[in-house]
Structures are given as structure tokens and as C-alpha cells.
Image (tube, rainbow, N blue to C red):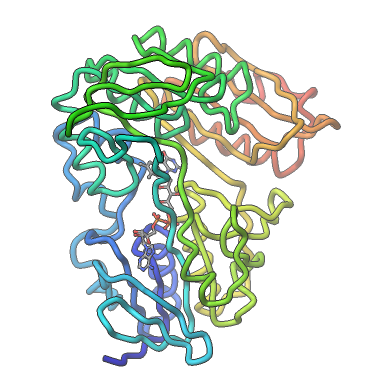
Length: 409
Ligand SMILES: Cc1cc2nc3c(=O)[nH]c(=O)nc-3n(C[C@H](O)[C@H](O)[C@H](O)COP(=O)(O)OP(=O)(O)OC[C@H]3O[C@@H](n4cnc5c(N)ncnc54)[C@H](O)[C@@H]3O)c2cc1C
């Protein structure tokens, strides 16, 4: 069937949902279609590695971004379980796996990312998981309820959050990572060391500077082996080694795609094709706030960029200008990160590191603040700390001139 829609949003995640809402607020009349491959309506992923694994009361519906009836009320056509398979930019048409074709005036690419899998032997055994979708989380939670021993493959944010959930559920938990500290992508030795000690004090074991080689078992996972020759008994393994951006559609349509960073867009989130925008994890965007071209795989980025792209597609001429923001919850601590990790920065800790009430500030050779991480046990302090960090990053504050009092620590 051949159809037409003024706005077509590919990807049924946070960025598309935010964009649809932003468009509808500004353009009450024209048609909007969201095409999403997953069977669920757009939902929040952060709870999937936190509350959802910790609490049996957490139902899948709680993660849905919008209440029942929202899309129908707003006359946003939501096509779940449908994949966009190709884009014909000359005919301005999207091909779907249902055989339908949808003509667009304006197209948003918000296809996000998928979990990277490990190529080792035994990767398909029952008990070996990745965590990206609600369906992944549902299966993982069922397994956690039966598990006695778990291994996290990777000490990034997914591995550390799932390790926290497993340990809190009384599961003997080991984290394996090829680097020498958790969160090695952005954490200094001091911050990584703090996190490791915090986890070890709560019973989590670390195997760092080592790599998982194989998953062993007869149908069901029984152990994990590492390159250094360790064998760890485990009935559950979660592979958290990063994500692969879903950029195939854009690349095949002839748009500029960076292998590592995604679909190239300007500060208005627009590709070189004036009818196509990109937002969320896949957007390789011109970041005016941090003065760099990069992509960000975080929740607030997807929400803010979806919102900005929707507004721009509906006719506003305001560039995207936010300071990147990441958050995480681990045991009883909460963290936020503002800014961006850069090579060659130095760090300063202000506050009480052993007491888990501190900020770590990364600065360049001239002392200018590039990135700040705040750790606190009090969730109500996180937003104020995030706002202070944002202000200081925007003004490129001199870190040497800052004291704990600037953060009320
Ligand atoms: C378990 C987990 C926990 C997280 N926790 C945090 C956190 O604590 N803090 C934080 O800042 N960030 C967190 N994140 C990251 C954050 O959730 C993502 O950055 C955000 O979801 C990105 O939104 P998006 O809309 O760009 O992409 P996605 O959420 O990936 O959505 C894209 C959607 O598009 C669909 N799609 C792909 N290709 C097609 C196609 N061809 N046709 C149709 N549909 C398609 C995909 O199936 C997917 O549903 C977490 C992520 C995960 C997986």
C-alpha cells in the first residue's frame, strides 16, 4: 500500500516520541507517523537495568513514556512491530517490512542502537544475556530470580548497574573487564577506584585486566572462562560491552555516516538532505555547548534532541544547545555526569570521596572545566549539582578557583 505522511519518524524510542510531541505542539494539523520495530510503544530504558531488576512490582507498563491513549489523542499514528527497510530520497519514500511505502515531507532518523554481543564460544547458551530492550529485561529478570552466581562482562554503566541489582538480590556477583577500573570510558583512577571499593564492600568481586573468553555449559550456562585462564562458576552472564548504532538505513540511503559516531547532522540536527534530520543515540551532531562534533548515547540527549528536532522540523530555527548529561544509580548512590570526557585532562576531587558525597572535575591544560561527575547518596541533591556543573562548564570555569563550597558539599 502507498501512503503519505507529512512527518515520518523512524524508530519507536525516546527521541521519536519526544519529536512527535514537539511537532504536535507546534503543528496541530499535519500527519505524523512513528515507525518502530519493537512491539512496545516508546518506553524509558534506564529503569531496565535498575528498578525493573530490583523490584518484582515493577511492571513493563511503568516504563512506557506516555499514558494509554496519548498517541491517538494527539493523532500520532504509532506503528509498532514495523521496520523501515529502505529510504528512497529522490521519491521521498520509506519502505517498510510490511510491504507498505510511506511518502514523507520531513523525515526523522532516530533508530538508536542495539547491544553489542560477544563472539566467544557458548554465546547462545541459556543464561547469557544482553540488555537493550524491554523484552531483554523481562527475560533477564526471570533469570535473576533463579540465579545464584552471576558474571558481568564489562564494567561500563550497564555492567555496573546490573551488578548492583544482582548483588542486592543476594547473588554472588563477579565483574570482568579488560581495563583496570570500572567506568574506564570516563572515570579517572580515583573515581574508578572509589566505585570498585564501594562494590567490593558490598560483596562484588572484580576481575580486571582480564577478558571473558568462553561461556561453558550444556544448553544452560554453568561457567565463564577468561583469557588469563580463570574459570568462574555462573548460571547467569550479562554482556555489557557497549552498543552498535543502527545506522544501516542512513548509510544505504547515501547519507553521510561516521563509522563510530553515527549520522552526520549540523547544529539544527539536519543532515545534508534538507528533508532529513537525526536525533538521539545515532546523531553525530555539532555540539555548540561543548564545541565538538560527537554523538551521545544517553537518555537526556535523546529526549532533548528529539524535542529540538521536532521543533525544528515544525519550523523553529533554534539550534540544539545542551550540555551533555548522564545519570546512574548504583546501590544507594546516585551519580550525574555533565560535559564530555577528553583525552589528556586532569582531575580534582572536591568533597568527601570515602563518604560518597563529592564531585570530580576534569580540566584541560589551562585549568578549564571540561567534565564534572557528582556522586551523592541524597537523590534530591542530584539535579542541583547537575545544574551547577552545567553553569560552570558553560563558562569554562577555572577548576583551581573552585572549592567544595561552590557545590554546597
Ligand atoms: C538498559 C539501559 C539502561 C540505560 N540507562 C541509562 C541511564 O541510566 N542514564 C542515561 O543517561 N542513559 C541510559 N541509557 C541510554 C538511553 O536509554 C539511550 O541513550 C536512549 O534510549 C536513546 O534513545 P533513542 O531514541 O535515540 O534510541 P533507542 O532508545 O535505541 O530507540 C530506537 C528505536 O528504534 C528502533 N529501530 C531501529 N531501527 C529501526 C528501523 N529500521 N525501523 C523501525 N524501528 C527501528 C529500535 O528497535 C528502537 O526501539 C540506558 C540504555 C539501556 C539500554
